[in-house]
Image (cartoon, rainbow, N blue to C red):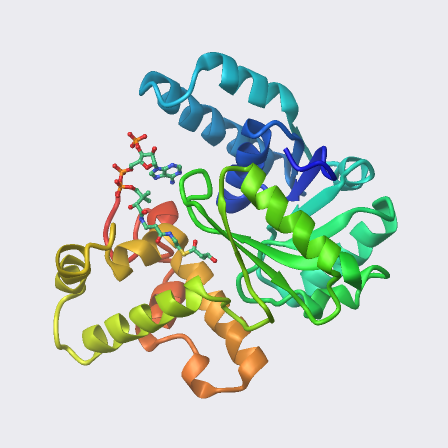
Length: 287
Ligand code: 3HC
């Protein structure tokens, strides 16, 4: 465990927030996962229990480790009470700048002065929320990948005013989770891994929209020619087409570059409510 951190509060109990919280609890941290709605918290609890049961039944974890992790993990709707004793808050709420700024301003009011306020956002760089707080030097991005229980990479991204101490603590924390930290020297929307992925996804969408190949065949090429674990369309379904759409829009807001706008086929799927695995249909049909 990281010596400066004992208690972690994760804000947002969606797929990312809940798995990030589970990773922290498994690594020994007292952890809260909080959301506004009780049903979101209940769903997170149910899904994490199912996932841990599966890991135990497959012999990947011991029942003792899992029980101990759940003992350390609190599911709550009372964000401020949880954050009041956090050493690190990881915000994994919706990709909306106005909401994030409000959350950071409120966290700044309730957290102790030493608390690091991190956002898991891959696209909203922390300088855009840091000035909503009185502790910009303790604000940075700590970006996990989906599914957070499995993926090893965690990007740590400081803004120009983040202190070296905050970066060092965040990097040590990521390592203490058994993750592989990747430290960026400066902010850039999308960071490193998503920019690589974005280039592949943009090309895949172009090939599809130009009628060069079916999306299934493009996925097959990525899996069998490049040995990617899943193709770009399968991956969009897993991450969520709504997430992909909103990330593109957020990037467009930051860059003003029309090339950042979501591809036409993504916009259509987003508007049709075809958001991927979670909605039963995206590129593929899961019903
Ligand atoms: N949550 C937790 N664990 C999961 C999981 C999930 N949603 N999906 C799969 N796993 C784990 C389970 O342990 C599973 O074994 P089980 O089914 O026996 O329990 C194990 O992974 C293997 O799963 P599968 O047999 O279903 O399939 P794979 O071998 O293909 O592995 C995968 C699944 C790990 C998701 C793999 O396909 C993969 O690595 N895909 C690429 C993921 C990726 O690129 N992620 C980055 C996305 S970009 C991002 O996150 C950025 C953000 O900003 C949007």
